[in-house]
Length: 411
Image 1 (spheres, rainbow, N blue to C red):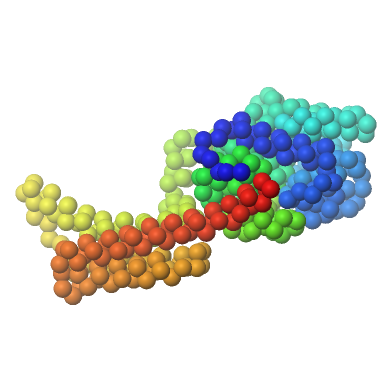
Image 2: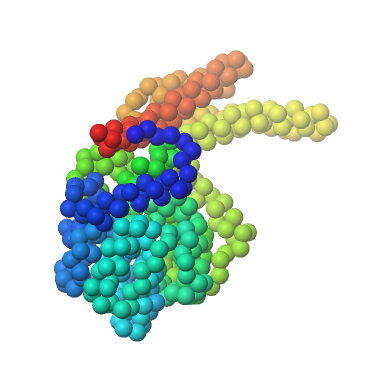
């Protein structure tokens, strides 16, 4: 298979449905992720819980964690299980809410829905109602449920903000959420993220951990807490899947939170997204720290010159310390070189660092020893080439294991 930009959300949904149709109809086949009772044990389900569930439901389990660790469900609650699959979590929730409660089991894969309806009828679990739909469009009224539970689903959803907004909409104020899902430490390249087949692999559709949690906070959820992290992909039987997951820092998390009173205003959401700490984290995750340092160095140099020239034309004289300006420029140039050096851990090549050191040294020589604009410009060009080279190598280091996995899964 080949990663091609421009795939629609519908094509991604089709790829996901195809994968989980196979899990519903042939659960004993080998998959790149854990399936069945063994998978339940891997992610933390106690045997005493599993013993009380229909064997067929457990047999097609494909979750990534144990969301019930949050203890969010109480007797008499109305629960929505998003992406219920064959019903392992729906049956657990059914027992927790008791006869006075209700469980809505939502899924979009016809084979899973058919299987779950049959199992519900056979088990006599009258408090479970199976409904068709997806996380982006939940067919329930506003404020109709007490708890939302989900297991390994949101990483497969193209529009995560919309899905999170739907969770907020159907919950009553103060309603509780328990989720197990996949997150990553480094962003997925756009070309890989646009491949519908790779979405079904559980990794490339996932979100960087801090961004994932912030999406819930932006939507109005409070007390967002990570209860547990686990190396879920170490249990995959596919070496390619393990390699891809490792390249992105993929892992499973279990989280709990509450629905706030209202959705934050646009101004509050903007202020949260503009938080310098959040912006800095996003820059670091995307490997753009060196680029930013280079831009700041160039702005300190040429921006200062442009400002002085503009003010002079306006008849304003500005006293500037050349030594101070030179010091700031050299600082950012050296910082850019140092950040390029950190890329060695990602791609293993020292060549960009050597070029960056040459560039920073040239800039420093021009500013601190014997100034000449041409020497200074050459230094900046060398530094820019090093930053771009490092960025390309980082991206290639991430794409390489994904490309290898694509070839393996297409054969």
